[in-house]
Amino acid sequence: MAQSSLLKSVIDQNYPVVAYGKGVFLYDIDGNKYLDGSSGAMTASIGHGVEEVAQAMKVQAERIAFSYRAQFTNQPAEDLARELAALAPDHISWVYFVNSGSEASEFAIRAALGYWRDRGLPEKTKVLGRHTSYHGMTMGALSMSGHPARRPDYGPLLHAFPVAPPVHSYRYARPGESELEYAERAAADFEQAIRAEDPQTVAAMIVEPIVGAAGGVLVPPVGYLQKLREVCDRLNVLLIVDEVITGMGRTGDWFACEHEGVVPDMLLVGKGLSGGYAPVGAVLMHEHLIETMRAHSGIAPFGHTFSANPLSMATCLAVLRLLQRERVLDNVRQRGAQLARGLRSLAERYHFVDDVRGRGLLWGFEFVTDRQKRETPDPEQQISSAFVDVCFREGLLVYPAGIAPFNNAAIISPPLRITECEIEILLEKLDLALAHMSGCFSTRGAK
Ligand code: PMP
Image (tube, rainbow, N blue to C red; front, side, top):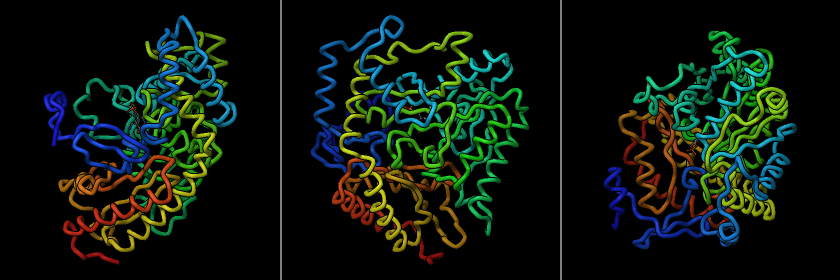
């Protein structure tokens, strides 16, 4: 298999060299074909090689690719901001563009601190996340992330932000506890974490409405996000929802927080915003933040050279228009239901697959050695990574997930325009991969 000499010299991985992509398929330079069952990292929302997006990029690049954000705005940026605000929950009417999900997290921290400073509360400086969550690899984003595996090397550089306990129904809901009871208990845990820090020092909390890579698609109990909104209002803390994975239609709504009718103070998007056609993220902001900041310090807590650059903006606009014109969210709901049915029927046949969970086209499940006891494979076994490798050999790309001791999950999250027939192909490949995995599990604990 041909390999990239550059990557080999930097990263000790035998990645194939990608040649091109079309729809839900990627091809490497040796002619191998892969079904993109995870949209890369839950990113390639409209699929690969979409001609009209490439065309929009060409037109914009020829017109003007770059202009500096502190000298010009540009029409694609203005149009995109307006359209995002129209799709977002009520009163989320301002958008600040960045270049990645991590930058969106960083910007949210700076904006939260700036807001409280403008309100005369400069001591509110902490942003609390949750265990089993991820908000990016830059230092501020990582400081809010409850992802121990990614943190230890950078300890001294991270902010001392504590994290609230994880929310993981399969692992931590108590026997006999209703969804609502678990939602209340989990929100109370977050409240407790804030009170333990002293709410006067806490600027914001940040949560993924559905946890992605860190947990393997953890859907919180119904009502949880609403309860968090109440906690924030009670303690005078901002609510930041990180929709870098869940946003832009992935769960069947434009934004996952709509599912509970919750209006956050800031909403972060990335990945699917450009569908992978450009490195872009954005922070969608509630108007009350902007009004306060405008009345005091002025709005922008600084940005980046490439913030809102015309080429990225035109790209995102073309992606968004395609999603709207083709009514792709309808497809997400229909194909999501089909995928869920298929995954559940696989879980019935493979005793080591459990807790199929998700929404729209964002699904995960756990590998267990014993279903009754919900026992996990030995974390050292790195079962998720082994599964990714087995799928890869079947020409299927999936995403490994979870944090030790629960690093035993996988994510299935194909492009949002996937067809009925392609979902069937995906399920067939999964079936073959799971059959190969059987060797790693005994029949002990089968239902
Ligand atoms: N937030 C979430 C929920 C993510 O999943 C990620 C990336 N996986 C990020 C933020 C960071 O985004 P990026 O990798 O684009 O910096």
